[in-house]
Image 1 (cartoon, rainbow, N blue to C red):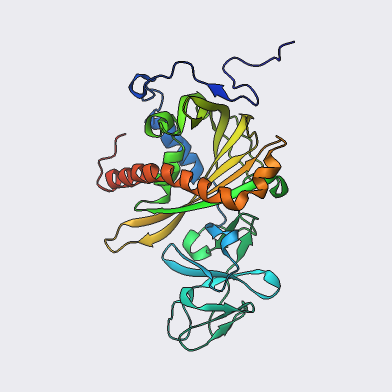
Image 2 (image 1 turned 45 degrees about the vertical axis):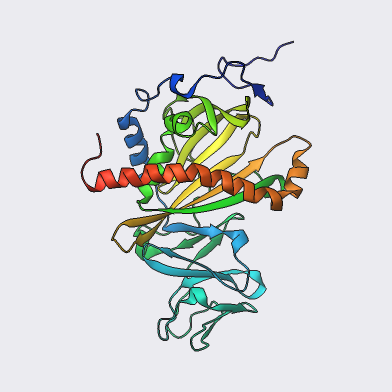
Length: 343
């Protein structure tokens, strides 16, 4: 007996061989569907959602060595390390004594020791240094900067729904571009460019619900989304068709969630964190992308055990996509900043 399935939906658990691959230049144009007003309205709705002043600064996996995880958010230097008992500690990255960069300091037994004069910080207020709220969501580290965000503060960030950590494989990619967070978010809210701009990764892409109210909002999800049927290229003509949904749960985050097909429940979270201006006065934004994969296939347990070998491959694949997409975001910012952006 055949399973009941809506037309055009990808079949569950299917690797497909494309019998007659369509040449890149002959695929169906998407420019008429990718209406600037639709993308702009999706971006506007995302920007109107609360963030609680939380910013992603990196991967949880990168915290815990002899150096702190360091970065810049909105022009503010911040450091994160593991204090007593392994708890996360965050605070300004400038030593209150004479301004040394705490990013270059050492962590010893849960204490951050400034390398200029030995001022020691255990995560509690000391000598003018004040800790910042920090949040570990199991994959990413968030820091709350109320003076940068300027919104009503929340006790925790709006973390998207994810597969259970015990049943998932995660990897985090970080890249930096000369643009603002909205340019990164706008890029992700334009799923129509996938097969044209990234033909090495995607084929047979069709947006079946542009901003069609398919996602739910319960504190962690957006109230609208783009639903896409797309095939991920594996090798040669071998592809994996899936249905995915793009939502924006907060102003600087876009989530792609596989809702049907292989890897159902897997998510790709793209977080855009403003860093501050570069030497030429251009804004800089960090793209922190978390790939959180899951599968109910029996062999996925072996993939999880091989995570140390797979994570570099996942990061490399994300880096290839973001090499192109950051160029897209940077050009968007350049056109916007010179009043040449269409629409």
